Length: 81
Image (cartoon, rainbow, N blue to C red; front, side):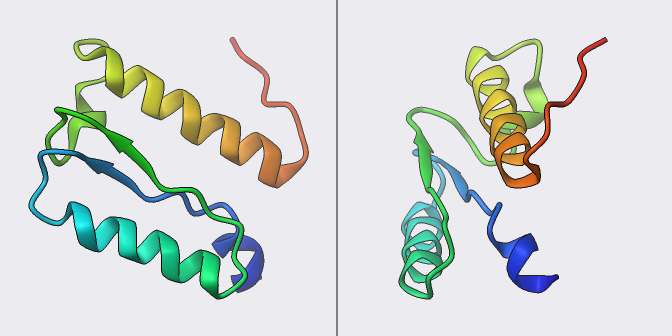
């Protein structure tokens, strides 16, 4: 179960976040360990930018990326309402 859970990790980092290097390093460590992981950088975004869904376009893009990663990892289509 742990390996399946780890396979959907996609660290996201706002480019303006102080810990951006650590987030990208974490993604690299996951990949080096054989975990299929992607690290995505969102230039100009702050930590927690995804909580601004509906106000910030990048938040919508990040949520869509998360949903797509979950769909691929689960091998199913999620129904939209």
